[in-house]
Image (cartoon, rainbow, N blue to C red):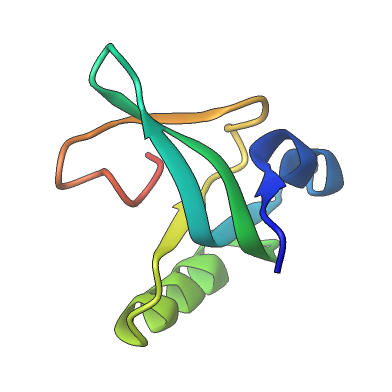
Length: 90
């Protein structure tokens, strides 16, 4: 499966209630110490946080490289690289 950029993903899922789980992400470390998610091979959209978070946990239990994204991330997905929030996009 081909990796789609984060901008392409958000163009398709641009709603104010589009929560996403991203699988097999491409990332890069920024000079600021933050992490940017550039794209993903698989995207699972949800309309509510609880359903999205449950699916995220299921993917993680299966050993997949999963990240979740809340609707406020529109143009880019950049976060601090603290262990407690690195995979959550909060």
